[in-house]
Image 1 (cartoon, rainbow, N blue to C red):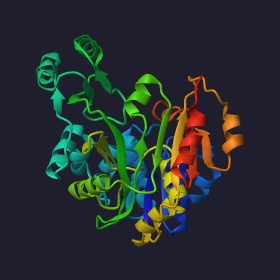
Image 2 (cartoon, rainbow, N blue to C red):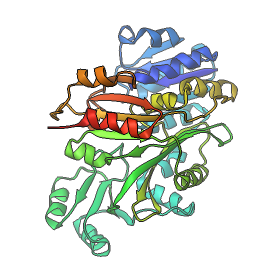
Image 3 (cartoon, helix red, strand yellow):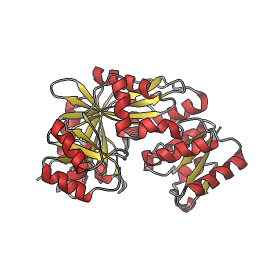
Length: 386
């Protein structure tokens, strides 16, 4: 089996996919714009071939790279990056080289938030009221229906980038005076806590792994207000989140895909769908899956691709927490203090790449505990401020 992995060095932990794919007997063929000499040794050892391009944004160079790898190794069986930024590029290459997986036409419902709403509604899942707005007059007409505050964000975008909460007409005017040249969707503001349904499906679309994240702070607020972030994987998943997540997987007909669905959990009960992402959750969440269940999700993905098998036992033995500290925040306890006092519970900690830092923090920690209360105590200590 020949597996082309686009940008296998980013994020930092994605090299694990290549390591496990090689162990499963797969030819891992990397394409990237980083020099081969700069790749970490584990990644180098797992790559059968690495084709360096000058610019991953130049599609003609990717066509040339895939053509060369096809000529040298034969038909390509998979093309993947697991990265939302390259989602459309992956699909375009699969379409042009007739490779299994999501094609360009499949992405229409998965790329645009306005189209996602249609799929959620067809699945019987409530969404925030709103639509694409073309100008300030159009936006004012919608606000007459919704009232302030409203959320406005690119209809097609990655994460919480360029997402704004508008509380009054002045902020609306300022937004339109400074908006980027893209389509924006405007929605009613939902007062709720973000919970996700995350997982992986097999080649038939069956969910073979599932998990969930509960966020204490919204990603939009984290990015726009420069806040730190704290979320956790609970040992027991919310039944309504699981039910909505299963319906969403079926509605999008996802096969051999990671997924990351975001919902608002309302204080008064009920859930509202936020968006569907057909890739793994970002940052260190894949590693959190491993720590929460004592599994190797990278290995299980490789087995699934190469042999159609997912044989890990999902035990949810631990509560698993992620916290991201920001360099701009004056914390009461230095990083060394946190590590010295609670080191036995901190299973992973590292600097976060600058590109991901606005949403995930400049320095991330993964904490694992048996008791939820203990984990929250550690997080409170690590994020305590003057």
